[in-house]
Image (tube, rainbow, N blue to C red; front, top):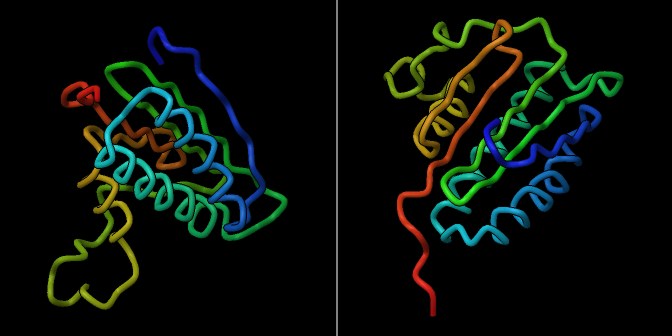
Length: 142
């Protein structure tokens, strides 16, 4: 993950763990002096990625785990979320903006992640999501 040290967390598949992970990651993002918009984007994307991994990847199975790895530099925040599920085909998600899918619960989270993060990739048959938020400019001091 580049020159920054990578931090790794492993959590049980419980939605109750999401806020703990967000607190840890966002504390580090704040420390790196990212602006409010970036913090919002990362919080939202992390919430969606973790809830998808827990609900859809691990099917809320508390015996399965979600692994989070993140690295923060002056230029970017990189977060990888990996579940222990059977995987999926990210390109086959329905488009949640079409009329027939507006009320369906699938695809919205990934659409939000893609909208708020700079780069989003899936690997390991959809079990691993990598999200990058690039800093557009330094936060003004003062």
